[in-house]
Image 1: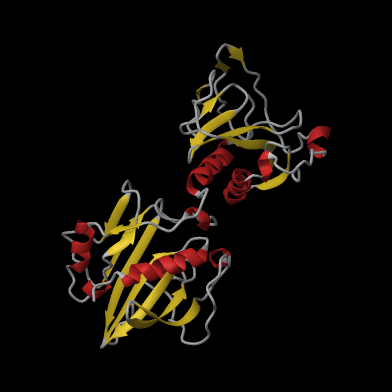
Image 2: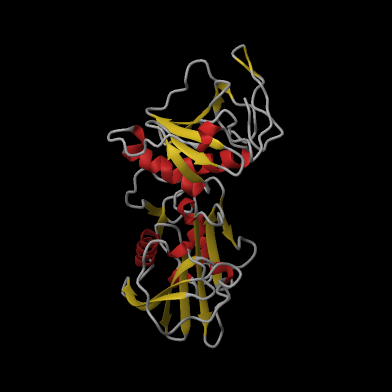
Length: 337
């Protein structure tokens, strides 16, 4: 089995089949690869199905282009090779496959030529491209393809919510000034990797955040709960300036929330105008990325005032952005009254 850009090679023998190892190069293109079969428009083909459309987005979100397709598989392109990718349903470990031993292929299996793993109930298959010089993608490509196939929803439904974990809520409320900004409900998440800051015995001093996962630069489609979540709340009293934002809060202009905004380069915040969320009149903005956005970088943030106190509730945005925007509104609606 040949793997592009990888010193380590997948199992040298699988089920008694000896594998031929080869090195890939950017110029290793056969005539067949240069004249890729274009069957993408065949009605009722696998690539024209709902699952086929989702799988194309998986490749694109992973950071690779679709060059063409066969009736049953997309043909993707990395800097070193072409590869084929398709899905089977439901997931069953195929007979005759063995666990892939490369660390980059977490939970994957191989038949000596192709690699398959489970994602959202599907078997995701990756094989070499159609050209005789094509090989399997390298470690980096496999890593992103696996992450995208597991993190990009096959079907978008309403974001599920859950009560804020009791210990996290208690810590947030330990600062009486901040308590009005501590949400009672947050998007449902996976608890492995859940962390908050600060934690006892360090006191909460006007700012508190809850986080699962971390930013995946350039791939906001993979920042959606339940895999990722970052909420930061803050209060600034009197003349004090909020510490979590590294910019001056905008006061003019009002854009309309739309999908694609998280992908756009922003050196300044984007203001969405005045809103009334949960009975609180305030304004909403999309912060620029870190460092310009501070610890609220790439967050959609709701800001309101009550007497001498200025409150902010921010949540890391994802794509589709309109879903992130409405999800923050639901978080704000859960604030204590």
